[in-house]
Image (cartoon, rainbow, N blue to C red; front, side):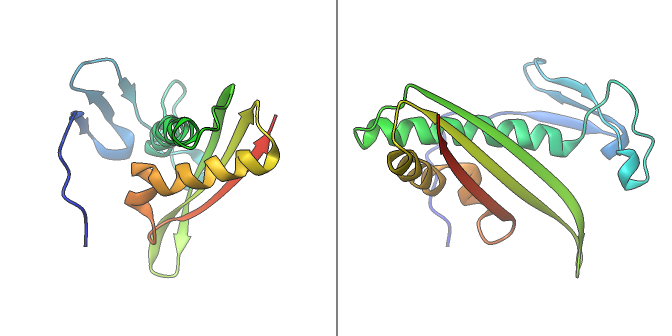
Length: 144
């Protein structure tokens, strides 16, 4: 059962042509050409991106914000939070699926405290919640 959401902001985007088309946000700040990578049998057009690239960037930003927020909330304010995300797409037994690897590089905290706020951030992050149980996600905290 999902929670009721009191919406604070709504993003809008439009895509035409699927994986070989375009994607544009309502504010026009994201305006990209899309391509199917050569490793997936596509053209791999130069200067184009993939839905997985866009998801990786969005997830990294959202997750970083969640980790930072939970650090402050728990009294463990990190000096820096850098999230590296890798989003893979591939075949599954029933079709196609995603796999996500997140590495959180946390400055100014011990390894134990970095792990604590990363775990709390993963529990809090809307992206993590949205894909929980549907996408394999690995999360690693590194104190730097």
